[in-house]
Length: 311
Image (tube, rainbow, N blue to C red; front, side, top):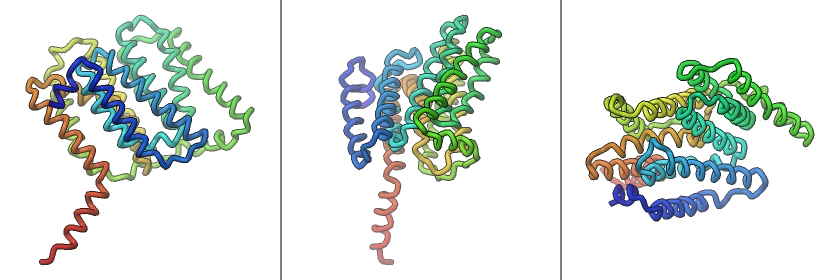
């Protein structure tokens, strides 16, 4: 039933899903202190969700738009606490643009103007969340291995990368935000991920199965789609490395993984021949994420029940 509803071409299911997401997002963050930082944070956070929704609608990678938004909205809702930090929320928005821009550039490899766009977006990403600069590992691989970059393209990238940083630093000086600049000297101090994620192991297994399924069928797929999937994989791995090195105890930083993770899961789901299998995958994902989100409540209930049992 759910798989059939989300697989339809009608906007109704996606509109309902969007409304449910906004309602849950409101109740989850209704205690938020209203100031300019939180307002801008929520604005950029919701803007990145809208952008991702449009991506699911028009991307050639995804056939089942509603299924893609199902996976994305549940993940991003679980880690929507990131909206209180307007810097990271803005960084998520620009990262979404980088990801989409690189996938679209795969369709026209001869166009080097996209390097200027990516340079600007990467610069803005790092300006708001400095570890985001390490996306350059992903970008270097894309530029050097998967496409030829001449001197003109490299210069365009450098100009695009430098311009926002120069303008941003000047603005911070003018408005007296020296503390923001001073914080950059500590931004690259290692802060290894220390939050336990045992509850997400079933999801990790599901993603691994999806990757294996993609590799087993990759020879029969369109080369452009295959390269886009590979770019999604590199982007995902790059963010995993960044979070491992700098994530610390900020669980909500997992919001950065929402878009590539959703692509992996929706592609695995949409190529299943059995509607029953699709249904199981959708409900299984919801169960895993609900179990992870309510893990403390579940443990508390379990302890209460166990405490009332006499042996």
